[in-house]
Image (cartoon, rainbow, N blue to C red; front, side, top):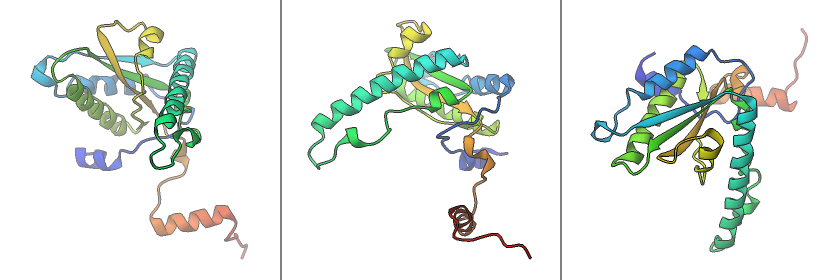
Length: 198
């Protein structure tokens, strides 16, 4: 698979199956970060790999608490167009943080020139590598990512930037179809069309 095919194939996975992922795949994905361009060739990056269920649950609970508070706070100031972000359903809920077999947390050394650009370039490499390995991924950047420092014992000199859940997408059993075929597929499940024995 060439790079253009990988770019076209990559999509965000909103939920993950419980199918186990070979650790060698994760090692290769993390290795891809080493080859990403960084500002002045000197922006140190750190990847923290989380696979233990208890730790993933702890991360999810903290993230949801922060996101819910953020959305509720934002709604106080967002009345210019009559919208209420606190009514946005389950936007604060992050089940993928527990569903995915692995969470890859990318951190950069705080206060470095080109810190943000270097980190996001590395994230691109990471997500393309996940696609090349046949896995789904999602880039989740928490409103206040500093909560990860305490949970994962990340030194204060490093700033957690994003969490990348990685695994097999839960919809892998339902392949992507052409629009006309997708409509037929949906109609079958909606009961509009019925199978007939001949």
